[in-house]
Every structure is written in structure tokens, then in C-alpha cells.
Amino acid sequence: MFVADPAAAPVGDGFTYARPDDPSHADGKSWRDVLKSYNNHSGQNPHGLLPAWQLYSNRTYEFMAKHESLGLDRLFILSAGWGLISASFLTPKYDITFSKAKNVELFKRRRRRDSYRDFCMLPSSGLDPIVFLGGKDYVRLFCDLTANAGRDRTVFYAGRKPTAPGCTLFNFGKPYTNWHYQCAKALLKGRTPLGNV
Image (cartoon, rainbow, N blue to C red; front, side):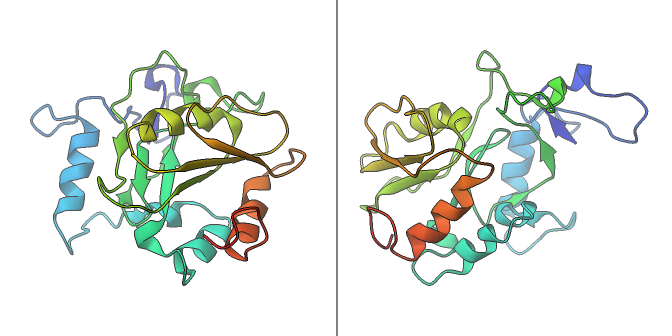
């Protein structure tokens, strides 16, 4: 299981814990490099990893993945463990978050000072705007990973306005649990300031 702080994870619960950038058992490569190689073997998936969008139980991910105006080729997941990954990227289960909620165990919490070699799988060329829907704790990583994308970036947020240099900001309303799922549906139905994306 991939977590933010394996040394602090519980002992004896049946898991072996690692960080994505820890050395694996494969010639000292990091787990991140192993995962990238695993995905490069097209058509092969001996460990039965799921595409990134399928790791989440909320049906909104399926709605976005299968939507005719979005689809897998334009959908990316901002992962606290792996970075900005394609929705179709085969990904192991992980339990890493930026959330500072009291119920989040410390070994799962990624801190700003932690060193990660995050993926950024956005195509290097393209004119499509980049739209971010997610919690405030993820805005900084989004901005860092898309800073050189060379296209318009929009951040939807709920509640307090985040710091997002170079991005257009749209307030979706008051914050509530998983507001971004409602925002995604509204966006794809043309019920936001951007219209259909």
C-alpha cells in the first residue's frame, strides 16, 4: 500500500507500506518508475491494476470518463501520491492525501515539505483549457504541475478564494463535502460560467 509516511504506518495489518518514490525491489528503481514501465507494456496488466478513474467509488468519475464531450483522453486525476495522471493510467491502490481533516491518519497525509517526483501527464501541445475541480488542499499542486502548460487554466472552488497564480477562478458556492462532484456534473451539463467544456 502506498502511503505518505510508511515508517508511521500500523504494523501487523497485512500490508507492506511504501512511498511512490521509494526504491522498489526491481534494480533499485523507484516504485514510480516501475509503475511507468508497467503502463508502457501496452495491453499487459498481470497485476490487475485499475485505470486511475476507477479507483474512486463516486459515480461522477464514471460520468466524466464516459461523457461524450470529455472522455478518457481529456480527463486527468490529480493524485496526492502520483501527480497529474491520465484517467486511463493503470494505478495501484494508495492512501495519500493533502487533507488536514482530523480523521485522516498522519501516515496518509502528504506535507508540503515532502519530496515527490510527481507525474504531469498533460500533453505537451494542445489548445484545450485546463479546468481544475477539487479541494483547496490540492490547488497548489495543480498550479505547480500546470504552470508551464501554455494554455488557459481555470480553478473552481467553494468557499474561501484560493491562491492560484495565473488561473481564472470561479466560485461554485459554499463549501460542502464533495462539492466538486456536483460542480463536475454542472460543468458538463453547461450550467457553469464556462458553459460546456
